[in-house]
Image (cartoon, rainbow, N blue to C red; front, side, top):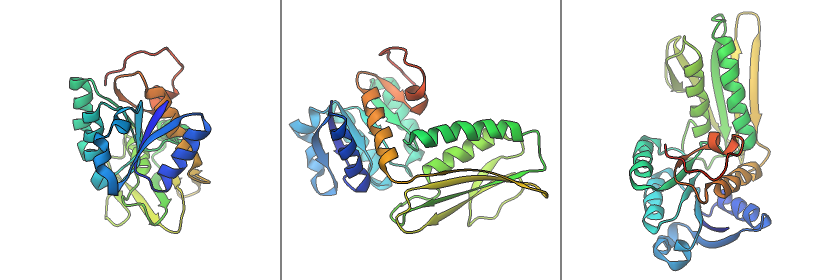
Length: 248
């Protein structure tokens, strides 16, 4: 498989290492100083582009990929106010876009556990729920996309919760407070805590390095090739059912 990398920071380099180890070729690398290469023959030859850049650049990067006819695996968060535009383009123009707030297989198992626990805890209103997420100091968005996904799944599963708020905002009993911490080079820690007057229930995922995110992104790229539409981790993780077309 021929891969283009859009964004060549620490995640981009980790993805490159994983892709090469799995026998793929990196045919184009685009970063802030060479965005003209979106129009290059090398970029257009890619089977898929894996994009981990900055929130301010992400949407334009996706449009450049679509213009070049290259499917996208998107790992940038903090731009989701335009996600519906991407979904519409996939549906109406036949483009291919894979999005996940987190590509770690372990985190996606954690998502499933979080949903299941929320359904159980819906019957126990004595427990309030809160969240925290910790990342490296270079991460630009807060809360993280992963934390927002966890919070939205909590809201879907808990009748007593209506919205999430950041740790700097006030709220009422129907809010889920997310505390965001930025320190050092922490690759990612997410925790969901239920607390009553008598005890705590905690579930937590801690990434050891970026390797798990990189592997998940490359697996998503392998899965995306040959498909159409808007895709996500639920598609990737379900039992294989052949190379069918998926339209959001």
